Image (cartoon, rainbow over all chains, first blue to last red):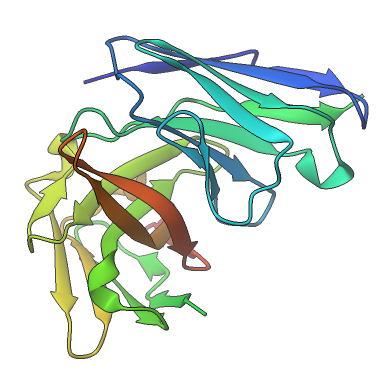
Length: 108
Length: 126
Protein backbone atom coordinates (compact mmCIF):
# COMPACT_ATOMS: atom_id res chain seq x y z
CA UNK A 1 0.00 0.00 0.00
CA UNK A 2 1.26 3.44 -0.87
CA UNK A 3 1.63 5.72 2.15
CA UNK A 4 1.29 9.48 1.81
CA UNK A 5 2.93 11.89 4.24
CA UNK A 6 1.91 15.53 4.41
CA UNK A 7 3.81 18.44 5.92
CA UNK A 8 3.47 20.53 7.85
CA UNK A 9 0.59 19.23 9.93
CA UNK A 10 -0.52 22.80 10.59
CA UNK A 11 0.32 26.00 8.74
CA UNK A 12 -0.43 29.31 10.45
CA UNK A 13 -0.62 32.18 7.98
CA UNK A 14 -2.35 35.49 7.45
CA UNK A 15 -4.72 36.34 4.59
CA UNK A 16 -2.78 37.36 1.51
CA UNK A 17 0.20 35.19 2.34
CA UNK A 18 1.44 32.33 0.22
CA UNK A 19 0.85 28.78 1.43
CA UNK A 20 3.06 25.89 0.40
CA UNK A 21 1.91 22.38 1.31
CA UNK A 22 3.90 19.21 0.75
CA UNK A 23 2.84 15.63 0.04
CA UNK A 24 5.33 12.79 -0.19
CA UNK A 25 4.57 9.26 -1.39
CA UNK A 26 6.26 6.03 -0.33
CA UNK A 27 6.40 4.91 -3.98
CA UNK A 28 6.41 6.70 -7.29
CA UNK A 29 3.01 7.91 -8.45
CA UNK A 30 4.07 9.52 -11.72
CA UNK A 31 1.58 12.40 -11.60
CA UNK A 32 -1.40 10.41 -10.30
CA UNK A 33 -2.03 12.64 -7.33
CA UNK A 34 -5.03 14.76 -6.37
CA UNK A 35 -5.52 17.53 -3.82
CA UNK A 36 -8.71 18.05 -1.84
CA UNK A 37 -9.95 20.83 0.42
CA UNK A 38 -12.24 20.17 3.36
CA UNK A 39 -13.97 22.77 5.49
CA UNK A 40 -15.60 21.99 8.85
CA UNK A 41 -18.90 20.20 8.48
CA UNK A 42 -18.48 19.76 4.72
CA UNK A 43 -17.47 17.01 2.36
CA UNK A 44 -14.08 17.27 0.70
CA UNK A 45 -13.81 19.07 -2.63
CA UNK A 46 -11.43 18.23 -5.46
CA UNK A 47 -9.01 21.07 -6.16
CA UNK A 48 -6.36 19.56 -8.43
CA UNK A 49 -6.03 16.31 -10.35
CA UNK A 50 -3.04 14.67 -11.99
CA UNK A 51 -0.80 16.76 -9.75
CA UNK A 52 -1.24 20.10 -11.48
CA UNK A 53 -4.60 20.39 -13.23
CA UNK A 54 -7.27 22.51 -11.60
CA UNK A 55 -10.75 21.04 -11.32
CA UNK A 56 -13.54 23.11 -12.90
CA UNK A 57 -14.34 26.24 -10.94
CA UNK A 58 -11.16 26.20 -8.84
CA UNK A 59 -9.49 29.63 -8.66
CA UNK A 60 -6.14 30.17 -10.33
CA UNK A 61 -4.47 30.95 -6.99
CA UNK A 62 -4.41 27.18 -6.41
CA UNK A 63 -1.58 25.44 -8.23
CA UNK A 64 0.15 22.11 -7.98
CA UNK A 65 3.46 20.66 -9.01
CA UNK A 66 5.55 17.56 -8.67
CA UNK A 67 5.86 14.04 -9.94
CA UNK A 68 7.18 10.73 -8.69
CA UNK A 69 7.17 10.93 -4.92
CA UNK A 70 7.19 14.65 -4.12
CA UNK A 71 4.28 17.00 -4.69
CA UNK A 72 3.40 20.55 -3.71
CA UNK A 73 0.16 22.51 -3.45
CA UNK A 74 0.60 26.26 -3.52
CA UNK A 75 -2.02 28.86 -2.68
CA UNK A 76 -0.59 32.09 -4.05
CA UNK A 77 -2.51 34.51 -1.84
CA UNK A 78 -4.73 33.19 0.90
CA UNK A 79 -8.33 34.30 0.88
CA UNK A 80 -10.45 34.00 4.04
CA UNK A 81 -12.33 31.04 2.52
CA UNK A 82 -9.09 29.11 1.97
CA UNK A 83 -8.52 28.37 5.66
CA UNK A 84 -9.33 24.67 5.76
CA UNK A 85 -7.76 21.22 5.80
CA UNK A 86 -6.02 19.99 2.65
CA UNK A 87 -5.57 16.33 1.77
CA UNK A 88 -3.56 14.73 -0.97
CA UNK A 89 -4.75 11.44 -2.47
CA UNK A 90 -2.95 8.99 -4.69
CA UNK A 91 -4.72 7.41 -7.64
CA UNK A 92 -1.67 5.67 -8.96
CA UNK A 93 -2.08 2.35 -7.29
CA UNK A 94 -5.29 0.43 -6.65
CA UNK A 95 -6.67 -1.34 -4.67
CA UNK A 96 -6.29 1.41 -2.16
CA UNK A 97 -6.52 5.03 -3.25
CA UNK A 98 -5.02 6.29 -0.03
CA UNK A 99 -5.23 9.80 1.38
CA UNK A 100 -2.59 11.69 3.26
CA UNK A 101 -3.27 12.72 6.88
CA UNK A 102 -3.94 16.34 5.94
CA UNK A 103 -2.51 19.81 6.49
CA UNK A 104 -4.58 22.34 8.37
CA UNK A 105 -4.18 25.90 7.14
CA UNK A 106 -5.22 28.18 9.96
CA UNK A 107 -5.41 31.91 10.45
CA UNK A 108 -2.41 33.33 12.26
CA UNK B 1 -26.43 20.68 -12.40
CA UNK B 2 -25.26 17.51 -10.73
CA UNK B 3 -26.37 16.79 -7.19
CA UNK B 4 -25.82 13.79 -4.96
CA UNK B 5 -28.17 12.93 -2.11
CA UNK B 6 -27.50 10.14 0.36
CA UNK B 7 -29.53 8.39 3.02
CA UNK B 8 -29.45 5.41 5.37
CA UNK B 9 -29.47 4.35 8.99
CA UNK B 10 -27.14 6.25 11.29
CA UNK B 11 -27.22 4.10 14.43
CA UNK B 12 -26.28 0.43 14.37
CA UNK B 13 -25.49 -2.26 16.89
CA UNK B 14 -22.38 -4.39 16.60
CA UNK B 15 -22.73 -7.23 14.08
CA UNK B 16 -25.47 -5.44 12.11
CA UNK B 17 -25.20 -4.43 8.46
CA UNK B 18 -24.58 -0.86 7.39
CA UNK B 19 -26.66 0.12 4.38
CA UNK B 20 -26.45 3.50 2.65
CA UNK B 21 -27.74 4.70 -0.72
CA UNK B 22 -26.96 7.68 -2.95
CA UNK B 23 -28.93 9.20 -5.78
CA UNK B 24 -27.30 11.16 -8.57
CA UNK B 25 -29.40 13.79 -10.31
CA UNK B 26 -28.28 15.72 -13.35
CA UNK B 27 -25.50 14.86 -15.74
CA UNK B 28 -25.00 11.62 -17.62
CA UNK B 29 -24.85 8.76 -15.13
CA UNK B 30 -22.36 6.78 -17.18
CA UNK B 31 -19.89 9.69 -17.00
CA UNK B 32 -19.18 8.91 -13.36
CA UNK B 33 -17.21 6.51 -11.24
CA UNK B 34 -19.18 5.95 -8.05
CA UNK B 35 -17.28 5.89 -4.79
CA UNK B 36 -17.70 5.57 -1.03
CA UNK B 37 -15.35 7.24 1.43
CA UNK B 38 -15.44 7.41 5.21
CA UNK B 39 -13.91 9.64 7.83
CA UNK B 40 -13.63 8.68 11.48
CA UNK B 41 -14.30 11.45 14.01
CA UNK B 42 -11.35 13.81 13.99
CA UNK B 43 -9.44 11.51 11.66
CA UNK B 44 -8.45 11.39 8.05
CA UNK B 45 -10.17 10.08 4.98
CA UNK B 46 -10.40 6.43 3.98
CA UNK B 47 -11.35 5.24 0.49
CA UNK B 48 -13.77 2.33 0.88
CA UNK B 49 -14.39 1.39 -2.73
CA UNK B 50 -15.33 2.46 -6.21
CA UNK B 51 -17.55 1.26 -9.06
CA UNK B 52 -16.03 2.08 -12.40
CA UNK B 53 -17.18 2.39 -16.00
CA UNK B 54 -16.57 -1.29 -16.70
CA UNK B 55 -19.12 -2.22 -14.04
CA UNK B 56 -16.33 -3.39 -11.78
CA UNK B 57 -16.24 -2.65 -8.08
CA UNK B 58 -12.91 -2.37 -6.30
CA UNK B 59 -12.65 -2.38 -2.55
CA UNK B 60 -10.21 -1.48 0.19
CA UNK B 61 -8.47 -4.79 0.95
CA UNK B 62 -9.04 -4.55 4.70
CA UNK B 63 -12.80 -4.30 4.12
CA UNK B 64 -13.15 -6.55 1.07
CA UNK B 65 -14.70 -9.49 2.91
CA UNK B 66 -17.47 -7.30 4.37
CA UNK B 67 -18.20 -4.60 1.78
CA UNK B 68 -20.25 -4.42 -1.38
CA UNK B 69 -21.10 -1.55 -3.74
CA UNK B 70 -24.10 -2.03 -6.00
CA UNK B 71 -25.53 0.20 -8.71
CA UNK B 72 -29.05 0.57 -10.06
CA UNK B 73 -28.58 2.43 -13.33
CA UNK B 74 -32.31 2.70 -14.00
CA UNK B 75 -32.76 4.68 -10.79
CA UNK B 76 -29.32 6.39 -10.90
CA UNK B 77 -28.69 5.04 -7.41
CA UNK B 78 -25.67 3.37 -5.88
CA UNK B 79 -25.45 1.68 -2.51
CA UNK B 80 -22.95 0.61 0.12
CA UNK B 81 -23.34 -2.45 2.26
CA UNK B 82 -20.93 -3.25 5.10
CA UNK B 83 -21.64 -6.36 7.13
CA UNK B 84 -20.73 -7.28 10.71
CA UNK B 85 -20.00 -3.73 11.82
CA UNK B 86 -18.04 -2.93 14.96
CA UNK B 87 -17.25 0.27 16.84
CA UNK B 88 -14.26 0.68 14.52
CA UNK B 89 -16.70 1.33 11.65
CA UNK B 90 -18.10 4.41 13.37
CA UNK B 91 -17.48 7.27 10.95
CA UNK B 92 -18.96 9.84 8.63
CA UNK B 93 -19.70 8.06 5.37
CA UNK B 94 -19.69 9.95 2.09
CA UNK B 95 -20.66 8.91 -1.40
CA UNK B 96 -19.18 10.66 -4.41
CA UNK B 97 -19.84 10.75 -8.12
CA UNK B 98 -16.52 11.25 -9.88
CA UNK B 99 -16.53 12.49 -13.45
CA UNK B 100 -13.76 10.89 -15.45
CA UNK B 101 -12.06 11.09 -18.80
CA UNK B 102 -9.77 8.72 -20.62
CA UNK B 103 -6.29 10.02 -21.37
CA UNK B 104 -5.06 8.08 -24.44
CA UNK B 105 -1.51 9.33 -23.98
CA UNK B 106 -1.37 7.69 -20.56
CA UNK B 107 -3.79 4.83 -21.29
CA UNK B 108 -5.66 5.50 -18.09
CA UNK B 109 -8.63 7.29 -16.64
CA UNK B 110 -8.41 10.51 -14.66
CA UNK B 111 -10.97 12.02 -12.31
CA UNK B 112 -11.42 15.71 -13.02
CA UNK B 113 -14.63 16.65 -11.23
CA UNK B 114 -16.40 15.44 -8.10
CA UNK B 115 -19.83 15.65 -6.56
CA UNK B 116 -20.28 14.50 -2.98
CA UNK B 117 -23.22 13.55 -0.86
CA UNK B 118 -23.84 15.44 2.34
CA UNK B 119 -22.48 12.62 4.48
CA UNK B 120 -24.13 10.24 6.93
CA UNK B 121 -22.76 9.86 10.44
CA UNK B 122 -22.88 6.16 11.27
CA UNK B 123 -22.43 5.22 14.92
CA UNK B 124 -21.97 1.63 16.00
CA UNK B 125 -22.84 1.14 19.63
CA UNK B 126 -24.48 -1.51 21.76
